Image 1 (spheres, rainbow, N blue to C red):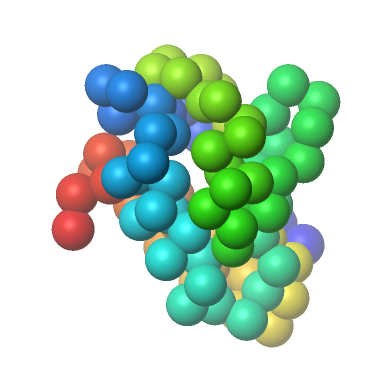
Image 2 (image 1 turned 120 degrees about the horizontal axis):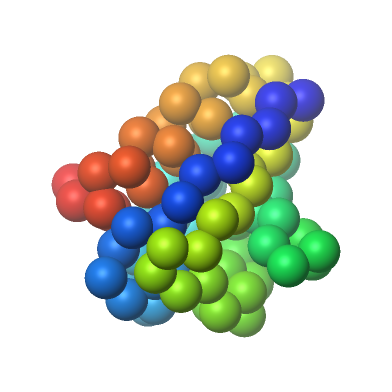
Length: 87
């Protein structure tokens, strides 16, 4: 299992478009990917779960990846968030 904290810099936080991009990216990995925010856990492979977190701009979240490709998954998710969800 690997964990990393990261600040969401997208101007609108994790609204529909970035949440969708994050979910799509997470689904490309075998590992379980979880977002931790405000003492709650959210499944990164579920769009509704991500949206229900209500993450706003400049909020810090923690990503947790656990599984056979956890390191690769972490790199991919962190890179997506750092690039502001740009393709």
